[in-house]
Amino acid sequence: MKKFWMISMLLIAALFVISCGEAEEEGGEGAACTTPGAFRCSGDYSQTCDQEAWKNFEQCTADKPCNATTGKCEAKSSDNTDPTTEPTTEPTTEPTTEPTTEPTTEPTNSGDSACRDMLVCFQGCNQDQSCMQNCYTNSTDKGRADYDALYNCLNNNGCLDSSLSDEEYANCIIGNCNSEADACGMLSGGGGEAADNSYKAPYGSLKLNFSVQAIANDTDDQNSTNGLTQAAFATGTYGNGSTSVTPADAYMIQSSAGYYNQTQNGKTYTGVQVMQVPVYNNNGQGAGGNPVVILDIPEESAAVGSLNTSLFQGGEAQLYVVDINWNAAQPSISCFHAFGEGTTNITSIGDIANHGDITLSGNITLYSTKNYNGAGDITSQLGVTACSPVQ
Image 1 (cartoon, rainbow, N blue to C red):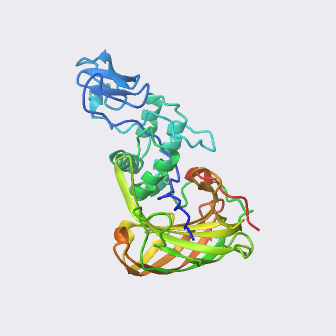
Image 2 (image 1 turned 135 degrees about the vertical axis):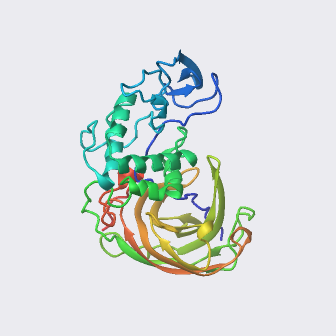
Image 3 (image 1 turned 45 degrees about the vertical axis):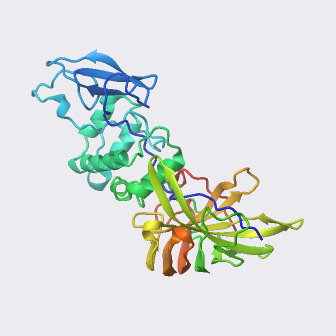
C-alpha cells in the first residue's frame, strides 16, 4: 500500500511575531531594500527606501549628522553627544500582534518584564521613529540589553526578512532565538491571553513506540515501503474526554519516518519526521483521516539518548496533533489540537539521510494552545489555528 506524503512542517512555534527594521546595508544609493519608507545612514547621507531601492534623502552636516538610530539628519543633543552613537536596533515596522491593552510610550515595569513592555510600547508607535526611540530610551538597562540581544539574534539569522510568512517567522525564531525570545517575555509565562477553559489542561497523553529498519528519503519512489509501518507509533487520548488518537473506525493506522532537507531564507533544516495517519477505505483506495500525530526530530538532536520534547526553550524535539486537509492539492495542516511536552527516548538510530534505522519510545503530555501548560491561551502568538474542543 502506498504511503502518504509527509506533511512538511518544521519548528512551528513563534509565540510573538516581530517584524523589525532592516540592519544597515552595504552599498550606497540604489542598493536594494525591502521596507518602504525606512531610513538609514550611508556616509554623509540620510537615505530612504523607495521602490525597493535606497535613495539619498538628505545630505547631513557636522552640526546635523545622520542619526544611526532614526536614519535621519538630526542636530546633536544639548549634552554634545553624537546621535550616531545611539543604539542601531530600532524597528521600522509594526509588530503584527495587536496589544490587548492600550500601549503607552513609556514602559514602567522593570526587571524581566521591561523588554516585553518595550515591544508593546513599539506597537503603539505606528512606525514613528521618535516614539520608538522613546520606548527604547525609557526602558531599563536590562530591558535594552535583552532587546538588543533579541534583535541581533533575529537579524543575524535572517528572521527580519519582510518577505517571510508567519510560519517562516515561527520557524526562524523558535529554531534560532529561543532564549532571547524567552528573556523578552515571549515564551511560557510571557504574555499569553487568559486560558480558554473549554480546553482542559492537560489535553491528553500519549505513549510512543516506533521502529523501522530504513528511514525514507526523497530518493524513494511513492511505492517504496522504506520508513513505513502499518501500526500506530503513538497511542493514547486527546481532548477533554478519552478520545483516542487511533480512531476505532479507521481501516488501519499507518506510521512513517522520513528524512527532510529544506532550505528557507538561506538556512538549511534537516531531520527526521515521524507521522501517524488513520487510513480509511474509500472504494478500495486508502484515504487519509484525522487526527494526525507528527514528531519532528532535528538532525542535531537525532542521536541515541533522551530528548526533551517541548514547544518551548530547550526543546530537542517537537510533537503535535493536528487535522490535515487531505482534499487540498498539497495536503496541509488545517488546525492544531495539541502540542506535546515530555520525553522521547531514541535507543537506536543510523544515518538518517541514507536509509538508516530508528527505534524510539516516549511519554508525552498534550496541551491545547488554548490552555497551554500555565502560559494561558497562546494561539494568536503562535500564529496557528486551534481545532475546536474535542469532547
